[in-house]
Image: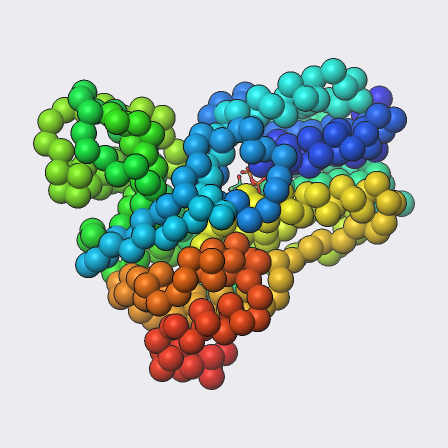
Length: 375
Ligand SMILES: Cc1cc2nc3c(=O)[nH]c(=O)nc-3n(C[C@H](O)[C@H](O)[C@H](O)COP(=O)(O)OP(=O)(O)OC[C@H]3O[C@@H](n4cnc5c(N)ncnc54)[C@H](O)[C@@H]3O)c2cc1C
């Protein structure tokens, strides 16, 4: 009764992307799949942004897309990205699309409000336990973050973002601000991120890179209020709408290879780029490769981001740990000294050797060489 061909733990970005691609490729025509999540329902909870350097299945779920993004420090730098627009996916549209797509397939079963507590493997079958019930599968895809052992320093990109609604039209930028460093850096790295939503509406996120997981919501909101008044120079009343709060690990998890038939997916599979937190597009690439392997009956193993990015990001993080409050100067230098295509390809894991060299050479050499030597 509780036996399935596949089990997916987590109906978030990676779990649902996988379910969608498996269903689309007819893998689930004759095979069964159960998907578990501790959440009770699907509501808008994230905006996933990235440069569109890879075609994926969710381009009809966009909140919007832009051909220019801005970086602000003591000057303004514009990145012209007409050839690879900066896109934001609305998670609500993403969940709706996938739920509608799989609704008619009787081989797919959702278990919401089900937290998976235990996983074990015996005789080539995986058993999972939740709510004192046992479920079995031949292959399990797991996006839960139970094991957070790591060899890296535990730092996070933690943030709170919300829609700000003004009473009248104000002169808002038509382009996203990727990083606005005109704010208190504290002892770590701090910037604001904004997405234009209309003449009277903007999404503002306050982001910190630090060893903290989360500040209180009130603390983040007071930073956003200060940004509206000081940086947007808006002194009248406004209301706050949709909000999201998160913490993305800037480290990778040690992989537990105890169970060969439990394949990690999403952030749990280290698909998050350590230096930037970008994960969405990596998940889409990884999912498509995984589904191709399933179609061809190939052996599936746990995957990693290309090691050159892991290596470079580790040096970057070492520099960050030393420079902390001065790190904004290094970010600004990266954006100022390189052309947009090289930056975007580098940040999106699709740079070539020449582009890597250009980026490396644009960094302050002494600081980076010191960190490279005591690697
Ligand atoms: C608020 C926010 C904004 C982000 N924005 C961006 C962005 O703009 N661009 C980008 O590239 N990346 C972004 N990221 C990083 C990354 O893309 C997202 O975190 C993405 O959702 C990761 O996908 P995932 O499947 O690994 O995790 P999730 O989407 O979080 O899905 C994991 C799911 O597993 C469930 N779960 C966990 N443990 C259990 C358990 N034991 N049993 C059952 N269910 C369980 C959770 O409830 C959750 O639904 C963002 C992250 C956050 C938190």
